[in-house]
Image 1 (tube, one colour):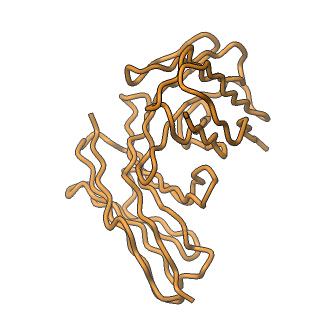
Image 2 (cartoon, helix red, strand yellow):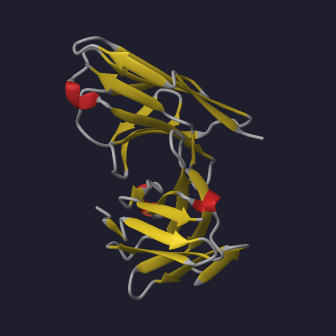
Length: 113
Length: 112
């Protein structure tokens, strides 16, 4: 099955700096890659997603890039703010597997004021 | 707009007791429904998913079962809980296109 690896497991950044989280996937047939943000005691919330026919997608301070050849995708958060502190998960899925999501292990992001 | 509800938010149960966690979705029809478990500091593991009433697919062998008695209701059950069943259980839904999945706020289950 699909194996998604996520790095780093923890990330501490100064407020205003950028944060980058990287994920790799094993199944070249995967074609959908969402990113979720999970705050303490809450369920994961979708923050951005990208499909395999697109190389980059931006939404305000958040961007995701996808390299299909290398089978990796990354989340970029610019101008980080304290409210960006959370656990972030990447995931991958494919149509032939009913779009069941395979998740990375998560990255705990701490934004220092 | 669509909303998803899970209850209870927290639950403490003794080993060997039964379990019933409920999830309901509002504002959509015929959603795909999912149960995940999240161990501390880990990612999410898919336990069950359902594409319609009475249709349940199990992803991992375990002490749990799922049922979908109504279109927008998904139930996670166990007849006898084990210590290893402790964790954070999340329900999610998606539309007909199967993506994206939207999560509820979960149930924190502690087994004593």
